[in-house]
Image (cartoon, rainbow over the protein chains, first blue to last red):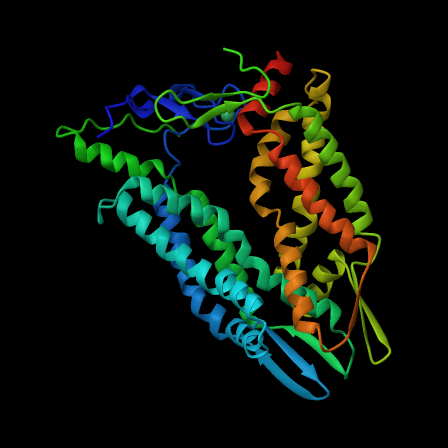
Length: 217
Length: 185
Ligand SMILES: [Zn+2]
């Protein structure tokens, strides 16, 4: 068990979200960079949950609708993310198929599940070690942007494959939904405050929890 | 307490680095962000990738990748691609140069605080390394369909990715703000 360490929140000290300076929250604005001070990210849980619901709603259309359409000599072929990956697998380009599978299918799903779990842990619905949860949070924040790779592939193919009737590639409706999932999960990871996990642990340890000073603003 | 160059202050209990004074941080950030800006000029002037099929040539550039999406009826994704590959990297490199350049001579540029605040917000949206992976995946996809040639723009883009990574890694947030605070006094 770690010894009881004093917490900044109990002394009314806030860590600036922008520059990292620690100052009394009563100042309301950071003396170094001028940003608004909060003890914790404001409405962190509500924002994260709302963004996750939106991302979850877009997840199915993102994977079921075609992200691009290839017309080759009159043949029109729409392809989803999964079909694009299967095509690489069939051509025995296994490393690329695995990269697409991890970046486009696994990472968004892991991100959504991990953030839902983090929100559940921070509100006390599941009990897991904050240390492991904190690592999962770091992982979701670090890897999220790599899911955008498929959107860039669509943009590159659309720009390159403009050969009129011979061959053209046009973007499909799935691309917008997919980009939406990536951007929404990135915002969700940014709005989550991992310190809420430790606050939860703290309130479990203390039998007589003193309410934290109200967050101004 | 001052932390000498090349050393770091660590947490007494768990040993995590709290602050560190990276060697010649300001010179590095200034040099790398200046180089990145020059490379961006090259990336956007020279072709990136040329594709030839049935006697027709098409070229890929960052601007074209975004513009063709807008033209093909996906303006939202088109502007997103422009934001992630052109606007965010340009804002980051320009912003770092604007803040760190004057700090080299111990001065804070006018409005440097606002610029520094926006730098942190822009960082996650700079996705040039992800775009480069996208280029590699596209190459594999197109491999058999057409002849592809790399242009000067492609190599400049690879170098740009390294420069941006080096510039971002050159200074940490606390150090930048500490130096800005000292310069403004
Ligand atoms: Zn601040």
